[in-house]
Image 1 (cartoon, helix red, strand yellow):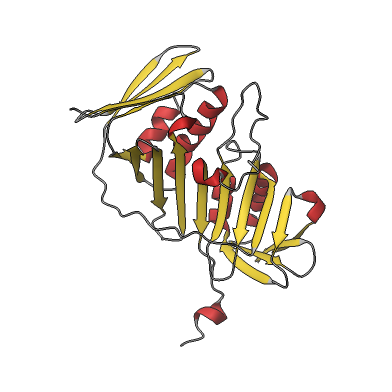
Image 2 (cartoon, rainbow, N blue to C red):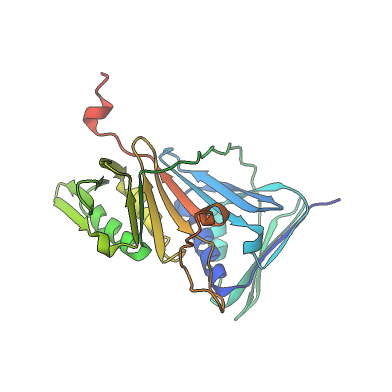
Length: 282
């Protein structure tokens, strides 16, 4: 039996989310493997400096049409994929089709001209990183647009973001450089959710260029969740379990803790060590 795969996205909001991710994935990595199974699709990639990791998971039910008769991995050029996605128009559906030993076919249909593209596949040798389940000490949910604005403002002053929690009920972010310093106090009332383990204080530093990059996926969800713990990468999550339909408020984070396990775009960012800590063994 020859292999055949077909993924169809018709829902306008889901098309917008999928298009945004596929178009901007080139800013994360140069090439990726898309794993396709009967359960859904999964993509994982790490930047060349091995500082940031991202993963995309979309279950079978997320798609409006899903045909797949065996597990397969497709190697994709993110630059080429972005070029194709730049040709997509609002009001068009997205269909991905693959037949054994053929290029990946991507079709845009609906408003305007129907378009069909063939994307040559790559042989990419990479191993998936195991991401352990973690109970974080701090969980923050805030507006994704506000998160993006904060990262953009902080990046004007330095290349390192410092996040401090546990001093009081507020969240503190700061960055300092040659031109000066910015300190931001995020009040508890100005965020969606904030939970911090009892008697926990933490101060973590992260490379700002990655924080800014990950904050730019505002189209994915109106909210973004940050999860922090000592000696553990920062987890940044955009829930993809909700979309626009007649009975659903668009882009609302699911209250069900299982939502991230179904459909999400997630980032994991290693903390920076300050010079004293980095050189203490020398």
